[in-house]
Length: 507
Image (cartoon, rainbow, N blue to C red; front, side, top):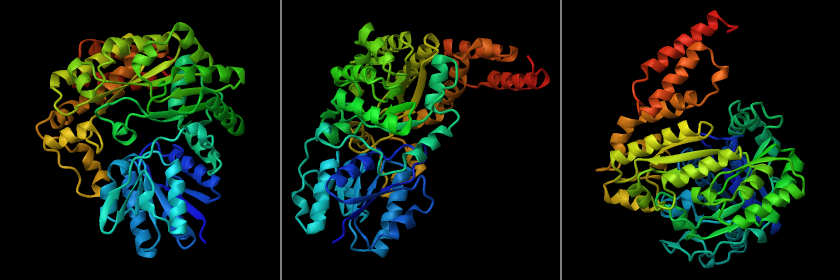
């Protein structure tokens, strides 16, 4: 009887060397049940499809994970090949997008089963049912086709991560991912470390780690409320410290990136983790990728000092908007601009670099609201030069409150799974909304802010030549006075600076 399971990570268009965390999580759960598990990552293997297809006769089923974008196209192409060569081989999909678009995966024949939401427990029960011929429609947390109908079984409650195997990279060659991260000359860790300490880090070996699942927040642009029902489960502080210690020692890591929807849901566990890291004398830097500005602003000086001492180098804050009416639509009215600024200031006082993201062009958002957000982000950067500002555009995604609103406003979603992977989709506008106008009117403006004016306005004056010092002043002036378009002066000064350095290399 077949006992091997293949798990496939499709091609990602960017950040291609992020570890396949979801596949590692379910793979480790399957190992506990004595299944043989292999992960194939298309981002590292140019012959990934053939690596899967060559084992088609040997495996119980093939599992595929995916986010919106390139992963959908690659995963669907592989599923099509599997259908052609092995019609009876079950295909199982999981991940955020399949969890909210399961009907489309089933209708197009790309999937036999879709695991919805957290998959560590569900995948074990599904594997057992496939192996023994058991009734799959009795397994909570999946979607499938039965008697010609597409059905979704009842939701599965979140499994406590402390009851699952501790995060492990044993199923893949972690060193390959670490080396790929090290090859990125301007990676997030390198840039942040230079900002804080003014020198290159001695150890750039980086891995990623999920410390929790779910989120209690109800953001209108996020599918987590639909998938996780606003529930959250996280590793305890002790178990998280144990996992970090084990990974750091095994792979000689200098940095760990925590990939969570919301890291500070349980402040007690975070503080316990920090104390445990210090107690165990684990020398490592880390960055939590989901932090609510309100939670950060509430931390005491002692708690912030503990974060820093335990290795927190930077963190990611989702501010999203500045206008109060927009924050209410986003269901983020608890993080108004003054709270965001307080959180940023507190972090920087302790040499923790905040990365702050803003979401532009949500359904029904006025142009004045967009401009207010852009202006606030620029002023935030000027007042706190070491902070990083990220401007993102709204895209309608299934399973979100804003998706339903977008449909009412006239948005026509892609007719096929391939459409969700098409780059053109990212430019699809919502009829009667500001999105279309925003993309044409403000896209270059946002690019000027993010990639030109903000970096120069915040760079170290002492390391600049004369034309660059003038460029810094020009960029600062533009941000101060909301002059975001037509950067003729920027390009002229950049050209002058290049000539200056070429003619006077010692200056």
